[in-house]
Length: 209
Ligand code: PRP
Ligand code: URA
Image (cartoon, rainbow, N blue to C red; front, side, top):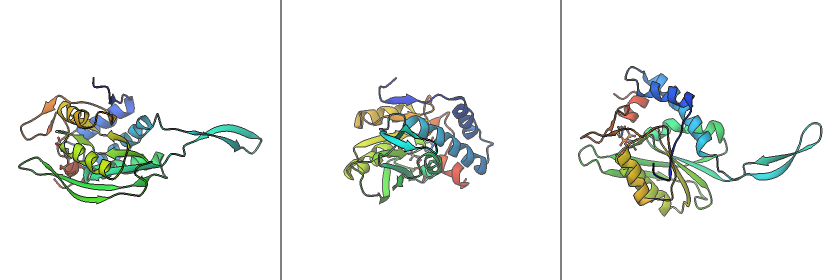
């Protein structure tokens, strides 16, 4: 198992992943399962965020507490990453949200960036790149290139299904970026789809099949 890879294990996450994989799941239920799976991944991928000791005034007397005061930015990769945003924001309501548009060319399978809008303070923020499918890793590496160019230093990648090839590509290009995923599947097929995977994520999420 590569060092930077965390395969998140949780029975509720297993259940939501099964719903996402099921070809008969309609897009409404797919979205719901994705949102819940993303919230669990948000919990797991924020485990090491720094907190600051604060004295909290309860109605009775002061109590010691800890607050999360780190600047947090989530960056979904369009389009499929959009479906992970609300699960993350349920936990991290104060996070800033950047957007990266990335598309795999259906013939060359190379990713091209078509949109970038990132919030200020990328250098200090804990940046969570959200892209549900890590297939060849081309999109994730291109997105990490864009984020690094924008000054991001504390990066992590969160996905829903990863392929061994994608994990290896990210590890080779960005060995210090941790990857969080519920599962690493068997392989890629000739069209570079993840097998068994769950099909075209964006199409299933937005009902564009
Ligand atoms: C999907 C997915 C990833 C990419 C993964 O996006 O959301 O961004 O493919 O493939 P890779 O690891 O081989 O680069 P897609 O290009 O289908 O665009 P969409 O989100 O707009 O549907
Ligand atoms: N993009 C998808 O949506 N699905 C895959 O299996 C691979 C890339």
